[in-house]
Amino acid sequence: MTEMDLVARTEPGQPVDELPPPGRAHVAFCSPRRSLRGSGEALRIDLPAPWPEHVDAVADTLAGIVHDGSGGAGRGPVAFGALPYDRDTPASLVVPAVIHGRTADGERWTTRIGDAAAGSDAATTSDVAASSEDGDEAPTPTDPTSVTISSVLSPREWAASVATAVDRIGRGELTKVVLARELSVRTDQALDAATLLRRFRAASPAAFAYSVDGFVGATPELLVSRIGDVVRAHPMAGTLPRTGDPDADSRRAGELLGSTKNRWEHQITIDAVHDTLLPWCSYLDAEPEPSVVAAGPVQHLATLVEGRLGQPEPSVLELVAALHPTPAVGGWPRIEALAVQAELERADRGRYAGPVGWVDAEGNGVFGVGIRGVQIAEDPTSARLFAGVGVVDGSDPWTELEETRSKAAAVLGALTRI
Image (cartoon, rainbow, N blue to C red):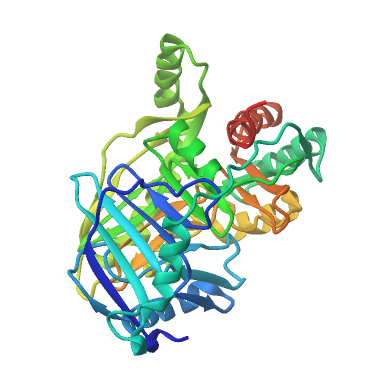
């Protein structure tokens, strides 16, 4: 079925849980301002490699679906995507058959997408999705009782990679590189994406919780949003661990704000994001000073970048393609950092640190940076996760190793309640 065979109907929605029921297939992207979740699959949009050069196909496809309903961000056909970190690979986005949306001010809606030829009383595609979602409850998933963790690089080998990166930075080859540790997970029970999503959402209610094609997590970092002509980004770079003690964490927040190393690392990312978005904007500004954002076991420096788009307004996916990867997940300069990253990490990141979010037929959308999550494999007793750190001049390999352990522990805690 192509987009020309589909019609979307949007109606006011009844109160529905923003999170999918445990055991149910779904896609979801939830935030305090606006949450969307979908079930069924009306259409899948495949982007050939390199995916950033083909994002216009998403807008063309969504525009081809007839929409009978009110407009507004997130209404009508919506494509959800967890895009690969590697720009030189293919990607895909899914258009659900049923989409439930809600905003912080209480608006709720449901969009159903079905076969146009079947007529208004027989939106067959969405009927199937609705019956699977609203019918008998799925069996309650069983929590794993054991988890086995392995990694290609030992902790000592990974710390040695950080030391190598610091040496190259000291020689002037680059100014920053983000290195991530890959952890492979094996459990004795199948991992359920909907259950994990609920745990990530409960642990980080202010974050962007996501679940697309088995990639599940809650990222604190907004890559970019475009709602109407308003564009926002909330880059984060510069990190210190949290202790759980409010007084100690407050002191550490002060240390983070006063750290020359962390402020410099943060400014690299802010400048890159600002300069990338500026050509599309009639107005764009960044907060004069960063704030400290708590994100589970760590706290980050964060700066809001906000503005208004000029004409013609780009789709959020055009902005995503231009921004990704920012220095917060890649490094700087970009080309040199990505080369060092590929050499030293020795792992395919997959969707880790790639853009994850949604886009509608009008180009509105929200994409976060795909961190603090886990990719469930085709065999649902297997999964992969990554934890990364920004390496700059003066970085200590063993301190960076401990930071990856803290970040990984927060993700692993969602997998089991042992």
